[in-house]
Length: 215
Image (tube, rainbow, N blue to C red; front, side, top):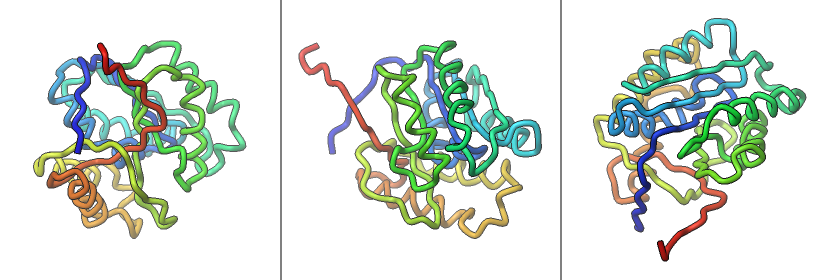
């Protein structure tokens, strides 16, 4: 297992198609980053769920997942499950975010995610964030689209447990879903931890990475 270290991370972009995507896919990573770097700027963009209960859940959840961060959240009102039909609006939202930040790291869905909304957002990222480190997070679902991934962020047992607790606490609208439970979230983190010789981890897809081995 090769361990690469980044330089200082001052600005992070986190994007999701739905409220709770960011927290499910990268909540442990956000907790780890924000604890290590108080004051880090986090620009979060969600394409659906604006103007209602889901936006309120998201605002409270991301505030908890980004402790001591300069969090700036935007939640749009595109229709859930219909993102491909609203491509222009989604693209404009991503480009507007890009215009106001120069991030050191981008957290977004995987390009091979089986959900059309997740996949659609992921396909927009390279058009706006061309020279940035982009980590594609995974979301467990009935589609069965989980597979081998290349990058891992280890999570301490305390962080893994806190992630699960915050997911249950801040998204009551999702508790009825059969896959939305402690076993699913902690089980996946345990499997990814095994793959990188840790107790728990979140895993990410990396589509393009430029090395500077002679620097």
